[in-house]
Length: 501
Image (cartoon, rainbow, N blue to C red; front, side, top):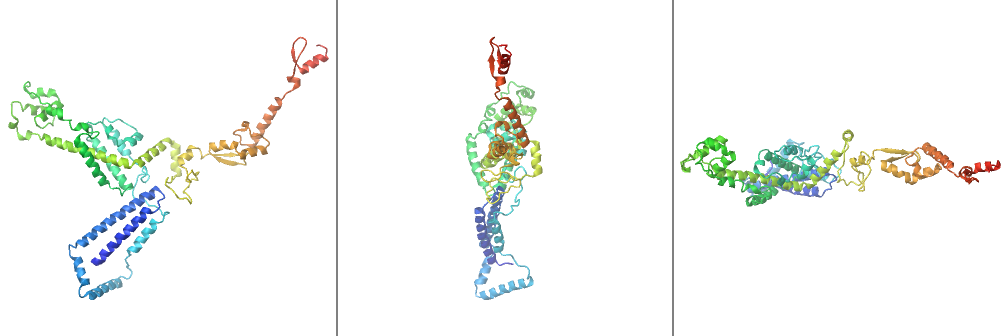
């Protein structure tokens, strides 16, 4: 068993090394989004371990069992050398009995950790579980919460894209408290649980408890003042019913009181401080039983703790309002992920079924936008590079038709990627040079012609048409005879030789 002093020394050393590793982790280069998330998780582990070690040290310094004091007296007393050699003998005997069992010092353990931290090319394992839709924390997956939302009563149905933009806007939901209970409460709690889980996985160092405490205090002040958005009507909701007492003198039976309806009977019962629950018949009988009696004469069991019920309902409403506040606070922090989720959903909706299947078969891996490796970017599909030197997104590659290849025989069987580059090359030097070598002018007549034979055939046809269109004096030159008739030159000369003119 290790001595108390050695354990304290070891814990102090571990604290120092944890601080050193945390600093190195924070300043280390992160090439991808996954690396950033894993870095936050590793720092969280270091911080948690630091707190655990500090708690253990606190126990040793409190020295409730006096073990530390006893050991201090032993090593600092009159027989300190005897104590030293006694402990040394115990250590040697332990190593003699177990020569192959050597404890790994903290130096070696943390050296391995630090070597991994400073290596930006290290493989990043999955340190926490994400769904396929979340893409390791880049996007939100609110499909389950969306299904619960659209199934709420008196809620306007919206599509998933609209829900992503407005899920934290609780003031748009009807303000009546009766519509913010039951299924609505379950939906809000489910949404909060998911966002808390997502933040714990992507932002483990964020202090949610402190943030929630501040939100709770702010909402409680506004709620009690009656100016909390979405809950303004709660304070005075029951005021009309409390003042609406019923004159029972015209009524001769409980059946007649049933005609007032559930809500009217509830208000009358609350006005005199009786229980207001139950069916229509039970409420009517309870109210009719008060006719001709003083309130003090009624049974105590029928007395209602109206103030207590109001306080309970108010506490429930306050808790629900605070939960909504927690969601709004987290939604503000996750603004970047919400924007990315919306773009990701739009991109998926824009793809056809064939493109989705093709992408799944090819198992295209889109590298993170934060990739900054200047040596050789990860590009398994050989995608063109963008202005920042990184491969363009695969969906953009397909959108511009860069997956289509066009070959031009006139350019020496040169291949062009995409229809835009193919159309542009007809006016470039390579194609013009190939046309000059064929003795053909590079005019608009030869647009979209890539075969040499087709170009030559068209050029011969154009030359023939051009020859036919040339000026022919025998046909095109006109003469007028003595009678005023217009004839061609050839006909005029023939008539003249015959003496007919």
